[in-house]
Structures are given as C-alpha cells and as structure tokens.
Figure 1 (cartoon, rainbow, N blue to C red):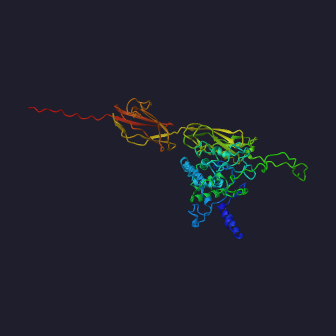
Figure 2: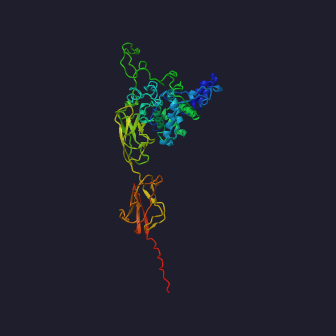
Figure 3: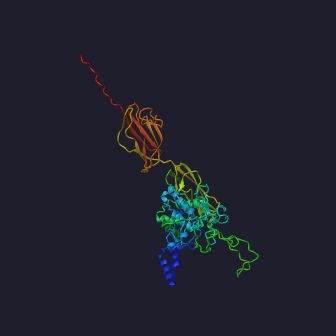
Length: 575
C-alpha cells in the first residue's frame, strides 16, 4: 500500500540513493490511471465507486482531513512486563480505550442482527475511528460514551478543503456558514441527518457519542448491501467514507493490524496521532483536546465579498488607477441550481418484498434550463412505510453526473402495501424539488397446483389421512408469503361455502368450511390443516385461491363406513 510504504520509507531510509530507488519503485508499482484530487490525494478510476455506489460525492466526512499515522511495527498485543526487555513502545498506540472498543463491538453485534449479509467487522470501525479521531482523542469520553468536548474538523469553506456550505444551521457543528465534520467518526451534518443512530439507548442520536457514531458508521458502510468480506465491496465502502486511495490504504493498514489482535486500555490513556493528511496542522500534544480546531475568525481570510478597506488599500494594477476588488469566492455548482426536474422516471410499482425495477432520477437545472453537474441530490422517503432504499435507509444522497442527472438507489418494497412518497431536494439549497409516488402491491401468485397425486378419501365421520399441500409460483418462481383462502364450495359453478361434507376445525374445535389468513411459506408451499368428514357421503370440492388470482380445486371423496357383520343368533339345543 502506497501510504504505508511511504511512512516506513521516512522512518527507515537513510541515504539519498536508497530513498531515490525506493521512490522510483513505488512510482513504477502504481497502477495506470492513478490521479490526484483537489487536495493532492491519490484516487484511481478502478477503485473509486460510482456516484450511485457512494451515494454522496463528499462521503460521510465531506472528504475532511484524516490522520495518516500508520500502525507500529511491534505486535498489537501488549507485552506482559517491561522487565522482560520487550519493547513496549506503541502499546498505548495499539490499544483501544475501553468504552470506545465496547462501542465498536456493540455496533458489530447490532449490524450482525440487522444486516447479516454485510459481514461488518468491528476492527473496520476501529480502523476508521483511529484514522478519523485517534479513537475519540485517545478515549476521552464519559461513562455514556460522549466525548468530553466536541470533536470538530476544519470548516469546509473551499479554502484548502471541499466547499460545503452550512446544511444544519449550525445545529451539530456550531457553524452557520459552512459545515464541519463532527464527532469521533467525523460525519458531516448533512450525512448525520439521515445516517445518525442511537447506539446507547438514550433516545438521542449524537454524533459526539461513540456508541451512536459507531453504529451510524456501521449502517453507512452497509447501506448498499455490500458484503465487506469481499475485498472489492470493502474497498467501495471505505472509499465511500472518504474518497481517497491514500485514505483507503491507511484504513486498511489499521484494519489488518487490529485483525492480528489488540487490547483494551483505560479511557483517556490513548495516544493522539500526529500526522494529518492536509499537512498544515501542528502536531497536537497529548493534552490538546481538539482533533483539528476550526480556524479562528480573526485569522481566517474571508471568502465572502467585502467592501474595500480604507485603512490599507490594495496596490492598484499598473494599468489602472482604481483600487483592486477583493477576491470573491466563485459560485459553486450548487449555487447555480434553480430547480429540479424529473429526469424521466417511469411508473414505480413493485410487489411487497421485491426490489423496484425502475429507479427515480432527478435533473438539476439553472434558471435557463441548463444542466448542473456535481450537485448533491437528496432522495427522502417521506411517507409512513417500511419501504426503503436498498441497504435499509430511508434517505440517499447522489451526486449529479455530467448531464445534471442523479439516479437514486433502487427502492426495496416493504410489507405495507399502498403508496410510497419520495421527495428529491438539493442539499444546501431551498429550491423547487421533485415529488415521486411509488406503489407497493400485495404479494401474488399466478399459478397454484397441488403437489401430491394421491386420491383424497375418507369414511363418513372420520378424518382424511393425507394433508393437502399446494405450491404457489409467480413468473415461474416460488411465491412466498402469499395470502390464500381455502373453502369447501358447493359446486364448480357455486363458490359459496358448503354447509355439509368435509370441514376444518377452528381454535374451539368447531367445524368451519372456510379458512382465510393462510400464507405460503418461503418455498411457496401451502399445507392446509387437518380435514375431517361429517356423516354426509359423496364427492366434494375444496377450492384454494391466492392473491393475484391463482386458483386450485381439489376433489375430496367421503365414503360410507363399512358395515359390521352381525353375530349369528345362538340356538338352544333341544332335548
């Protein structure tokens, strides 16, 4: 990994010749297509997920700076004693504060239950937590897991960082002008708004609480049905958190390190990282509480247009006698958006439990109808429903492409049937959005057949020996959880319930000839309860119908009971 190799190079290379050779080898080993982003970080076209996969061009952190310190070379497990002569350096750095470690493991357990296919390891959360905040500033948290003081990244004002104007009116970061990444997992407010979770059960989702932040990070990494045991999906998930190849390599270094083993250390005793990706912040001392304090207003250059100052006029250009105009921040793509338009979304209909085949799309436009690229569009499910986007979230943020179009992740229909409302808005702007309506229909079957071929017969007053089993399918596939009704009908032409013949029993043991509320199992099979016969003999029809109109008719035969031979009369002998 490039980041890890570079770090070791700084520590171990002692001559110019060796350093030059190593750097040359590193450059030669890089894959074609490696580029750098606006902050000098490496990105690659083959590992960077598409906007649909990342769901947010800025990632969870807004691509804020992160710590680049790499794991120590010694074992991640603590030495038993300094008296053994074993090098104890790095023990505190390798350990994880007790409350922070507990939060990571609880988040893994929660995701194992809610999204088992994601295979989220707690070591991944620990690796990201190390890179983002040095494990909550070395575990400086209270008993509930809340940081002793807020952890804030630099304000994202475009001055060396991404430009993300305020999206929360300062509610999370205290900044009503620009967003700042917040908390031990460094979420930007617009992402925390939908990704936030209550991990410690206090009824709040607080980005500065390690339990809440760790659980939110787990859901964020698992939101697209990625399988994190697959390296390709793992890479996509990490890059979606911060879209930088160096970031990916650094996180992977710590992930592999923690997988080899780690240990618990007391809260507040962890060491703080020293190297940061932007290479502008001085190394904090162990007593410095903030990960990266926002610039002071008195020293930060203004990015807004200002009137020329009379105290120190700017030197005019050589060919002009007027004072120069102070520099202004150019408008961002988001600033130019006037409204959103539906980009040709087709009818959105799906059966309960199915994934919608059509996806919503919105186009960002200026007031003249020109497409606007690189704008974050937020799709929010606004109705009371259990339908979600794939990954289980009710909100997805997607960046518009070169045509100004953002395509939302596919919807996954829940079990509640009926309309589903979705709203598309521009992140950071209040402009005309787009409203969508999707419809979830009842689970259905188009075919229903009996699985057995044996004749179903019974003697009057007895019970049928064989159970009635049927298989429901839809488009040739097993139709699971489909509602069904079974009725002993009067005839082929009269579907009303018969008042005699075979019957089922209700919970009180009384005879009933119509059963509703039945459902097929996961394999589309429907096994009916025990059937009984009264004293009426003859041929009867059992009709089973499902949602969607599939019907099967089964013949039931009731025969007379066999007559029992009477004993011969006894004849008394005659004298």
